[in-house]
Length: 62
Ligand code: SF4
Image (tube, rainbow, N blue to C red; front, side, top):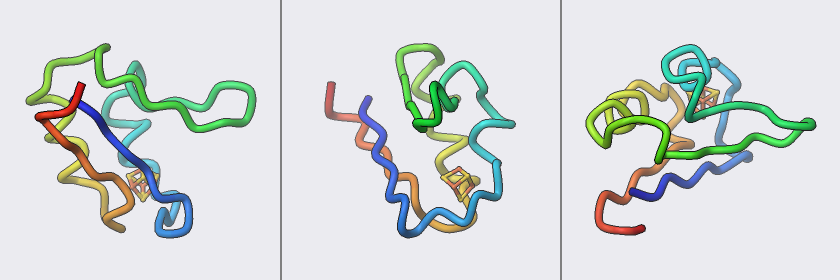
């Protein structure tokens, strides 16, 4: 599972960090995504809730 984030599209609604704080977090001011910290289904669920479309998941990528 690979998740990409487009900072130019993100509206900072916070759905990702609220939904899965272990996967989506801010470290030293940088937005970090670690899909290995949750199941693929859980990650896909949060990506689907992103209101802006900034998050894109590729289930076939490592
Ligand atoms: S859920 Fe989407 S729009 Fe909201 S902060 Fe995360 S990436 Fe940005």
